[in-house]
Image (tube, rainbow, N blue to C red; front, side):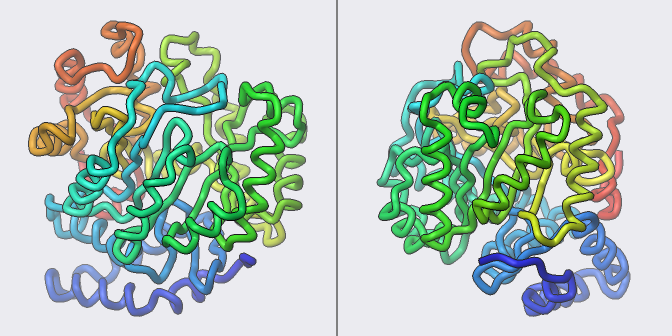
Length: 417
């Protein structure tokens, strides 16, 4: 079972890592790093609750638990890249689409119109090794439906002593045996999609009769296996009406879920050329930000994370290409799993891909790039995603010329325009 713990307890659990990182910086930079380092730690925990799982502290399911080898890598990435300006390490979270097959038909599917392929096990292994060199600390399996493949479990076992692994799933195929196997292999967290506390509304959103029951069984099996269990939800207009969101939180509390991750609907995948009306209005986005902060003060509910809060300029901003990256089923590298543009094929030209990532996504950004640039990208959309690098290189070059707002968290690290 998880339980809330104090931030002091977080530092006690991770003392060897935090103190080791401080002395590493002290050796490199001297006493001048003391206060900036402490400000960074304070800012990262602002309006965040911390919970204990498996005798470790958890800040967010996409950040390795404290202490762990993955968290040591995570912290070193930030100190190397943003304080010491070491360009060899540059991204923390890497999403890999291991397939595109899925029994669901969600209205907001982000993998729709993307390559209908399946990475081989050796290709995934090669990608993970590349990501290790790039500083990655968290590897996220996604799809399609990643649980349709059982061969990927072995790669978790091969790398779990260095990296933290997460799976994003509909829950389809997560029976008790698979859940226990994944836990044994070293999987840290599993995020299961559930869009509403009412069965009929959820099933309509997910495009499959019985989706609600599949998710609930998967949640139960994940919890029983000892996996850190997350519910991932697209915050639709319907869920944001009246008091539905708090009803939903009460509902998943009854499921003993560890964390709720609320995402804004975005015009990507199936919705890439959809009317802008699918996006939330500013007042709804502000409501999600407020919910994140309110929930962090309530101890008897699951931890609540909203993408709206995380990606606010006063926090981390847009993490495309700086916080996370995504590889589709053909090996094309996207700056973000919601930003369907290719920087090249990581299997065929990893050096070129890395150079493009460094050039065009070399600093954090205060706004969602997809929201800002989608209309420009649409000019090159031919009915399938991602849009090739050659088509959108001019847009990316133009973007470099603009002075865009640097998120508050990274200003503390000395990142400037």
